[in-house]
Length: 565
Image 1 (cartoon, rainbow, N blue to C red):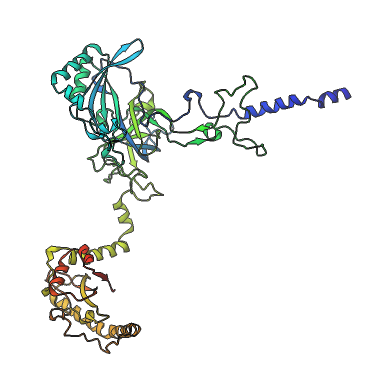
Image 2 (cartoon, rainbow, N blue to C red; image 1 turned 45 degrees about the horizontal axis):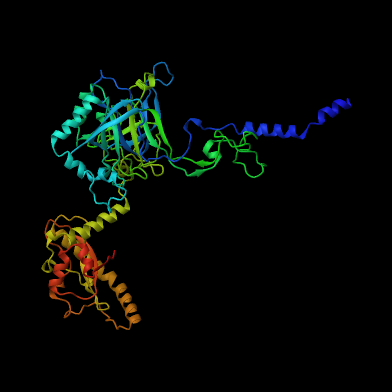
């Protein structure tokens, strides 16, 4: 028994250590990363590069195989699932979609490739006669300091049409692959960048001569996205992912966190390998660059291709409200989608504003998901900044009604723009009749000129006169005492001895200003007084000129508004 007890409790310490290392090594094997995409380093280029195109089939008509766009953001759609035999067949489902803005690309060149033992090698390149500055910027690191002489020598060499024809014939005779050079129109997007993105698009279908003629016919012409793809087609998205900088091993590889009492950190790998070989192998998860990797996301279904000239490019058969794909307030950190767009199922690599490459799928998809006909019932266009509750501005106004800020802005706008800033009204001094005397109080060498604000409509001049008399009576009885007290207090503070009455110095006020109110014609509407305070009483000519100028010129003449309600 004793011997058995000794054997049971006396284990070499080395064995315990080895067991502990083995257990820790097993815990760290639970990682979510593939060794197929090593090295995980920053991409060499910002644009997604197409490293392989779909296989060419001469029996098919000539067509392009790829295009480029800019990621705008994501939204939500509702549709009926068409999958016979499934429990969700013909039931509503909610899915996330990505919006890619695709302005028309411009074709600018042709590249011919020949097959060699080392692979494809370019034979010659033919450029268009005219290239825009946004694609010429692509060949310069600093456009402003450069001499901007790109393609000048090429233009002189190929000025003769015979030279271009000779190069095209060489492509027809010797090349096996024809690719089209096309660039984006980045100026049509919300991006601040002025340098266009240039790529090669392989031309598939037909003979080599047909491909060359097809590509040459597209020179300097726009290529719409609906001429490359169609609805319900499956495409691949090639882009550079979102960068996260230098990240730890747990967030980079998804290794399991160590127990709480682990010495010197939890978000680490406990065992980074055996004693021999005496180096850390490349298969061990380590910290380093995370994100900004070149990736290809395959089999994204196209739910919709929207046109720029369609005011209802986000409307459906069930949602008949006329609305565009841009949500209220625009896509966050992107803006408004004003060009054609492609709606893709799910998420795609990259951040907003990043250029993405859309390519026809390399393998024909025959599954039910790929061949399903998608019919959208509703597209969410509410604000993506917070929890949007309204789909369109019209819906928001109909629900909230007239707001206080709208009344204030519209009232002030009518009072100022319609009576002061419109030169067509030709407000002259002789049209100021019936100006209220209370608006001409003499205070601190300042004279207050009564102007107009729209109040409500009157049926006739007599009705307006009755309304004005009633208003003046109330004004004489209630406002005189308060105004007199305020004047006395202000004058005593400033050392100015005020008059006990509200009478105005008749000699200093022009006769044309001694009127009660303003009313120009039967079509005008009555107004309540709005006071304009002047530092010095201007002459008749200056006042007449100032009233006919815009509101911006009023500030130029040192006018300021003092609106008294």
